Length: 309
Ligand SMILES: Nc1ncnc2c1ncn2[C@@H]1O[C@H](COP(=O)(O)OP(=O)(O)OP(=O)(O)O)[C@@H](O)[C@H]1O
Image (cartoon, rainbow, N blue to C red; front, side):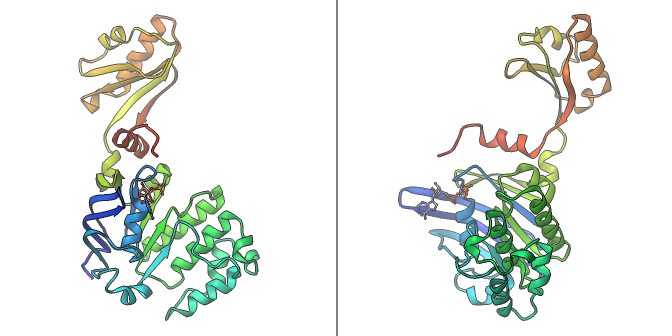
């Protein structure tokens, strides 16, 4: 039981001229939620599909529960749950029938009715898949991934397009899987969701890992003071009033940020100094607040603000 849930080493995958995955390595633990994050086209789905055994790698090594996802596919099937990005359910089949069918493949499944109820799908049990709303389709696909009580689940964008209630129900379910010792590997574009759900984050860009670590470590430490005021404040004069290791920048018209090299310098005294400095010049610093670095900040720092193809 000591092997990790997933071990990926030097993974490479090309589609013709496009290198989708360019030497990627990471490990996902059992009983933990690992979030794979990255801009559109970063290579997340390709990586997950290789781990699921749906695609073959060009090179590199992948182990899932210690096994090879292609060679040992039949041994892994009952132990691994998969929620693909787009449904994967025949369009004419009714929601309840599909779950009963999935349950029949497993030795000790979760009762389908209980899962339908839990994910708010009871009223849609007799509705064919193609007539379900996008959010209902997502939830059915999630239910199918977990019905066999897997040891590991791969969830590709499990909450994309869900309303807040359905997102919350999905978060609760993922939390319960984790508490039951199930390994969860998921992708998401919602940084707040990754911050809230995951124990470990792997940020991918251009098919490579650009950050990898416990979620709390990635966002630890850095704080900054932010406020809004009229554009064109004399930032050097403000900086001169602050401890020497602090800097003031205006990014975007009238958006100001104070950062300090020594974390302790960004405390109550600094907030008071900035307020006093502004007051002496009859400036109202609107939305003055100490901002903790979020996962979204880290993500944008590492992957930039440019749109991807
Ligand atoms: N079957 C395919 N044939 C050709 N190119 C593909 C194929 N699948 C993916 N790609 C390309 O590989 C790259 C990585 O795609 P992938 O779907 O793995 O990224 P992703 O990180 O999951 O993106 P998104 O966040 O948009 O889902 C992209 O440039 C994509 O266009």
